Image 1 (cartoon, one colour):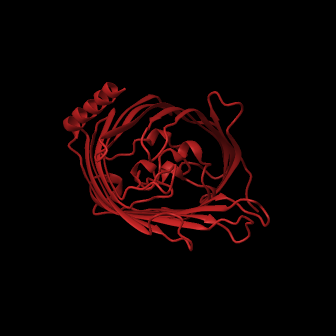
Image 2 (image 1 turned 120 degrees about the vertical axis):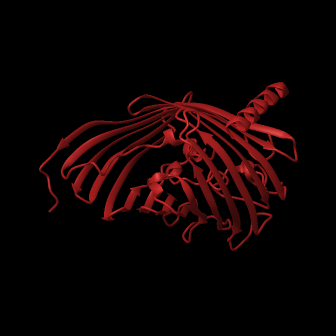
Image 3 (image 1 turned 90 degrees about the vertical axis):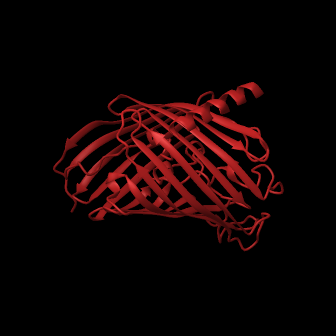
Length: 380
């Protein structure tokens, strides 16, 4: 096992030195729904499917290793009611290999209102999870495998130089007398570029915030209410060399803040901070990223536990200072239109402990419009 770990670490360091990136390594996990091209009266059926394996070889004291293997399927029907309003209804299914039946089966409903050019209001299933674009320390990529589709309200704004994403995800609804807590996650992301964002180059500023609430006024459990938040602000600079072997170089640097806002503090820290710096390269088929994370008393309710000062197993186990070197490799290939294949490796080297945790995975995703028909149905 030790020689295996050393081999992977050596490979990643060599690759990082050669390409030296901070792009989204889970782009092909996202459903791609096309609404702008729909005509009034169109009824379409969209099919999203993702088949995945992700093996987390984590053996440290901060989080557990687990293998996710299975499929997500979501068929849905969309009716374009008018030029600026559409309704969608479908079903979300998540199945783990070796698990009897579906681990998650639930209806999904979405109302999408384009209330002005470049601005959308969404009720129901949100354009959430990996579609938000959070950085890893404050939003765990593995939430995709264990949490429901985000459901609530969202406002999206996409303009030439700036974009915002404001959302509230009502994870768990609570009725009077029920023996559980209400769970709500909200957030705001904003980006501003010195040039057109669509060009995806040059200097841009980014703000990300997320707040997680665990409580409720009508629950019957005698446990403390919890409210915790993270804020991140940073700069990204993108070079476009336009070479055959190198299409993009990305530099990014973020400052992160952790805040304990609960009336009764149940963890060891009231606040914390961190820095997250990454550098990366990509071409048409490969993405490579390397980064350094430095945290001081850092915690994140929705973030990856590998970066935190508080153990997932025991909140009494803490380490004020965390220093981690990250390396990521993604090979991506479009099998055919709407079908993407991804192969990835990710490593996390804990500098003070001289310990390497890593994960690797494969996935094939399908985004397909399987039916479209124009009706004469109109709203009253």
